[in-house]
Amino acid sequence: MSQLAVLGGRAHLNGITFATNKFVVRGKLKNGDVRIHIRKLPENRLLEVMDRIPFIRGISKLAKLNGKLFLVIILLLAIPWEWFFSSNSADAAVSLWSVIAIYGTVLIVLVFLFKELWQYHGAEHKAFNVYSSGGLLEAEQVQAADRVSSRCGTNLVVIMLPIVFLLSNVLIQIPLLLYLVSMSLSYEIFDWSYRRKRLSIIFKIAAILQKYIVTKEPNEDQLRLAIKTLSKAIELDRVK
Image (cartoon, rainbow, N blue to C red; front, side, top):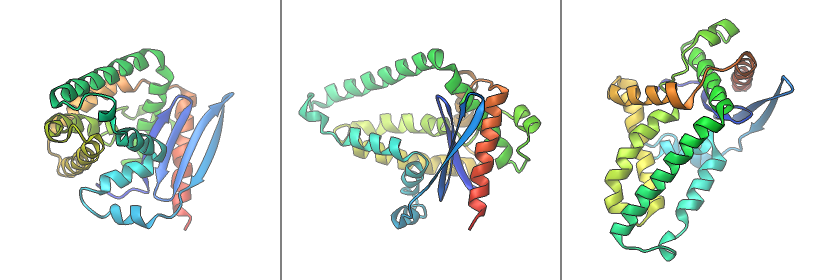
């Protein structure tokens, strides 16, 4: 992928976050006003080294973009669930499908309950699409931009799910390893297909999910928030 100062972003119930290699910039709306919170990332030589190693760099980039979520996932997957549930492989496979069904149900509920979250997600995508294409972060340009992003994590999930299914026959008893291996492989496939413009079916499926499920058209305040938050992230990266 081309090197951009801003690695990517994510949406919250009340705002948007953009991350660079050095800073995490979170913006939120409070009574119509934009509030920006800046957090400088501690220097981490290990992550810097990981960023340059194929099949490992995907893990480090996720850790940078959303460190807390990454740690929660690692902790949950590190729990020896076989101590509490049957270790039979057939039962484990059923459990995997049950977990996926639960996550799917939760996503459906979130779609209907948290419209604002998906609006913020749409605003994040619009702003980032303008930025990554070299455009100016102005209200009219951002408003007219597409809500679908080829860099959205949804693309990664579409790649990752079949890999999880395939590897689960071997690694089902070691969920942490299953997640890390699947994540690493998925990122490399994502990176390769994005740069080479291959596996277009993946991006088409992800585009449908983004357009009709995980993003909604944002309002003016949410667009203004996305523009200011992303602009601040770009500005901070330029300060050496």
